[in-house]
Length: 357
Image (cartoon, rainbow, N blue to C red; front, top):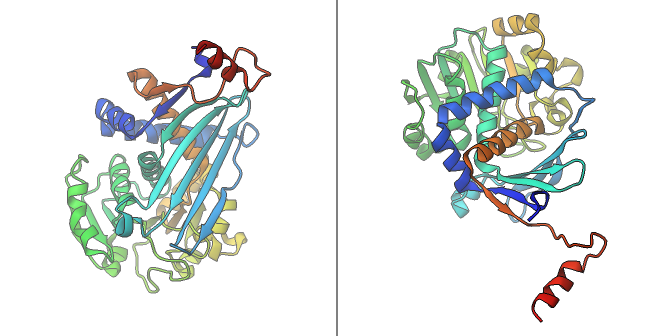
C-alpha cells in the first residue's frame, strides 16, 4: 500500500503508551517548551487561525460541540472537534470534555493522522497556564490556589509545578467528592505539596497563582464578588468557554492586566466578554515577546483569559504524532477510498468485483 494512502490513528491506548514510555514529566516539559517556542515563532501571515465555531445548546443537556481549525500555509490543516457537556460525569460517567484532533495535508487534503484529544486537551491547557504563569506570575510564587477541582485541575497543578517551586496547594470546589479525590488524582505527579481544602476567601488572600476551572453555568457567574489578594496575584482563568459564562468579577478584571490567549474568541466566550475591548491588554503572543511587559505584569495583578487556542492543539497534536512515529505506536489505516483510476470513484468497487469472480 502506498504510504500516501495511509492515515495514522493514535487512539487513547496509544496516547497512554506514549506517556508511559516517555514519562509524564518529560511529556509535560516537552509540551511547555514547544508551546513557548510556538508563541515566539507565531506569524499570522503563515498560520491562519479563525475563531472556533459550532453549536451550543441547553436541551436536552447544557453543552456544545465546536470545531477549532488552524492552517499552516503550505503544510497542514489541524482541526479539533471538542464537546463540552458539564453534566457528563454525573449522568454518563464520562469526562466533561471529549475531543479528537485531526491533521490534513495542505497539498492534497489527505488525512495524515487522527489523535485522541481528551487527554491532549487537558495536557495543553495545563501547559498553557504554565507558560502564562511563567510570563506573568511572580518568579517566587509558592502558593497555588485552585477553584474547581475537576479534570483540568490535575494538569494545572502538574504543569505549573514544573516551572515553580510550589510549596502549598489550597483548593475549593462545590463538589466535596472532587476535593476528597484530588490527592489521589495528583499521585502520579512528582510534587511534595498535597492539596488542602480552603474557602474561596482564603484562596484569594493567600495564593500567588490561582487557577479557576469550574463548570459554573452561563449567567450564574462570577464565582465571587468581594476579594482581597496579594498585589502580585496571577490568575489563570480557564473555565470560561461558553457565551454568558464567566468566573471572575468585572471589578477585578478592570484592576488587572488582562491577557487573552485569543482576543477575538475571548470576547465571545471568555472573561473578556464582560469588558470594553479598549481595557483589555496585549495578547499572549505579544506578552511572550516583550520582557518589559512581563516584568510589569509579574509585579501586579494579572489574568490570563484562557479560552483555548487552536495553536495549542497544533503543538500538542504534532508532538504526539512525533512520539507515535518514534515509538512505533498508532495504527496505519486506509480510511480514504483510492483506486488505480483516480478519476473513477467506482474504481475500487470494480476491482473488488473482478477479484471475486
